[in-house]
Image 1 (cartoon, helix red, strand yellow):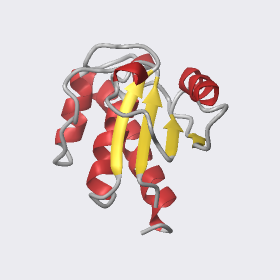
Image 2: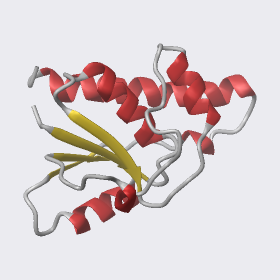
Image 3: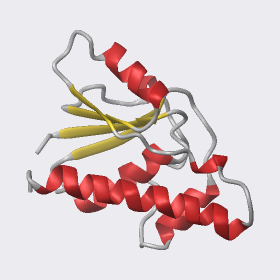
Length: 140
């Protein structure tokens, strides 16, 4: 089990904050979990809605970039978008940090009725939860 895990996506608005909230609820409290974006985005209210459906809240109210994190030491960085993956590989070229890429679709690309959009966010949430459970079950 890593001691510190970072989830990175494009803007720290949707995918990485969801992953952070899920990981904090699923992993032991001894594991430090954080999230960041390549760029700083805006909070997305659909994230709050789909997390609340399963009794969770977004950890950080405002999105943040990697540079804005208080701590930059992580055992494992999980990237959720191509842009985040490229940045993480560049940042860790000279360090011994494991970087994993979990391709995660951007739910903002879904158009349609509110229920269709929420379903896209739920799919992202459920897939991230499944990935976290599968990735860390062997370490529990």
